[in-house]
Image (cartoon, rainbow, N blue to C red; front, side, top):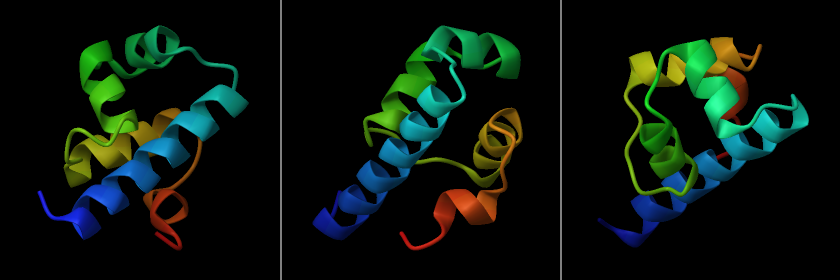
Length: 74
């Protein structure tokens, strides 16, 4: 994975994690709400996994935001 791509994934993951915590969700809380595997969310938050557009939309909706807000300025 290229450094630029990895840095982008890290920033996106950090943003998702920060918003999740701001909303008061644990990873388990959010993944149960989203019907998603906790390990998958953990990998996304750590920048270890690329995020598909459908998954990003599901996460955005679960956090009461938009994909645009999650991606803005990355």
